[in-house]
Image (tube, rainbow, N blue to C red; front, side, top):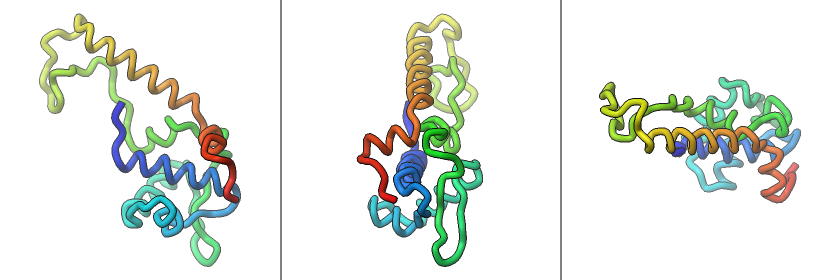
Amino acid sequence: MRTSKTARYALHAALEMALAGDKPVTVAGVAGALGLPQTALAKVFQQLVRSGLAVGTRGVGGGYRLARPPRQVSVLDVLQAFEPPHPPGRCLLVERGNGACPRTGSCGLQQLFDEAEELVRCTFASVTLSTLARRTGGSRG
């Protein structure tokens, strides 16, 4: 499973919110701490809010927080806000477009990749931001 740069930024942003606990994080603070571009990160936080994973507060003392406790937000939740799941059965030979697979249903490679993708999805669904925060060293809040 490949993840876009934006989805990886979103995972880092969500983890920073989990580490901050009840304290809000700012785009500038996260960008500075992680060495990420502020403009890209601002769009990531906006999408996290639109997807219901984060809430934003304007003004002095404002910033972004997770909308739910970190133990209720999985890595898969964050990834799916930025990348729709790939449908099973997509051909490894046909990268883009509507090209038909010449071996639909009988390709052992396609089946293998579908199984691997499902295992990755299950793993991401089983890991929460709380788990990641513990692996990272606990709370910063």
